Length: 148
Image 1 (cartoon, one colour):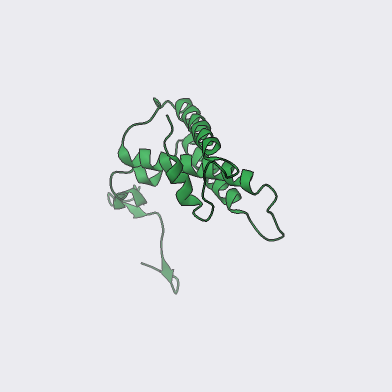
Image 2 (cartoon, rainbow, N blue to C red; image 1 turned 90 degrees about the horizontal axis):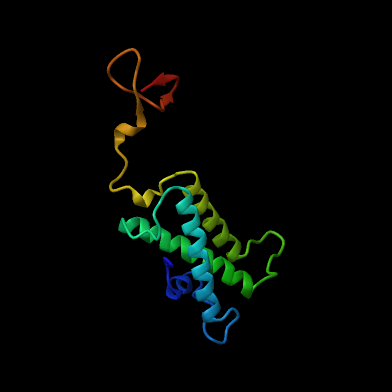
């Protein structure tokens, strides 16, 4: 099951309409979407997830974006295979980088920020102090060599 649709890929590349007469065609991009979803599911399964992911909604939305990024990267690479000029980065390389980083986040067991039900607890930025029962901050800010 793919996590995104053709319209999600099209949102990423609005200047390049995807249709039956473009290269790649609509059918080819839909095939790319399915193939990227298989890649995502393989990584998720390797991390112990049951696929396809259907909940929570914010994780599914993140996977939709990841699926669209991967498909857009491959589609645009097909549209513009040799578009690298000196000091430039084609859009497909940016999409591919973001897609690969998303896969790596799953592989590393990192929870995408969108999965968290609320903002991180402020207490998570503190460590336990050995001297007192009060937590010490992880970061200390100093001005003129004075700690706050």
